[in-house]
Length: 333
Image (cartoon, rainbow, N blue to C red; front, side):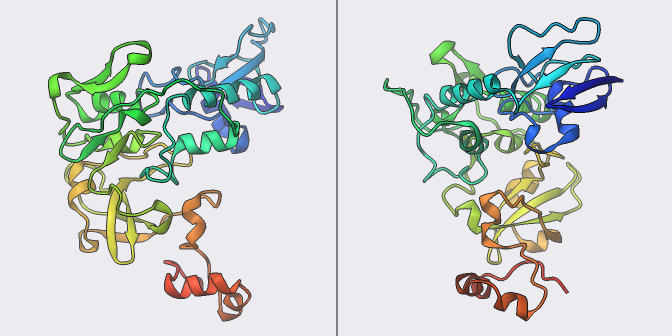
């Protein structure tokens, strides 16, 4: 075991743990952001530099500080290490620069992008970015292409995090796409117009932190904050069958894998569950999925605990009218 100090908090974790996962054992706002790192995917991390931290003491044996900021997702802890994240102004300033770099070629598609409301880049820019841009050059643009019957690639939005490549290689099997070109010519693409149609290929949609890979059965159907995510499961011979159903009224608009508090998929699901099972009768409903209150998805009060009529009477009139039209999925006793 190794004892480290992270933002003034002393924790004890197993040797070999990365600084990122050590911070996640504490949780809260001290956890560095991650745009490319994905715990279930081997080899991910170290590409976006969003999680840079300052190591002010390397270890008990060598207490000298590391000369440069290090990516917390691929740097292992050592006994006696002292790490600064939110308490270090250099880290916060550099993080603003990382946001600016990621947004250099990213289009202002949020009003029409299906990822809006659950986009990691939106959250990253909101929490760590600046409100203005210094970039005046022409941005990279690409045509939208279909890389399979159910997946569309909008390369203009891609930040080259490689998550989809690792997912296709390690989860779906028989990878036929990757990063082509170098520098500002680099792009995600398939080899000689191949299509992605493996049984678990839909998981590349869930791991994409932006709106570069989208579900063609869901595109432009609804804004995510008007939907109600519900936990459900079914007996599936291919996968765990544990999913999120996204409802609008009585209609299931899309099916996704369940994610943890860091936006990482807990259990991969097959394409049959994702794309073909969109009737309530196909599933056993468990109840509404908990969404963090800071998320725009929670704004429609779908999980609002209504205890009695007097509680409702104390709510604003606009909220009462909304509750009448769109009642919560889970009522308290």
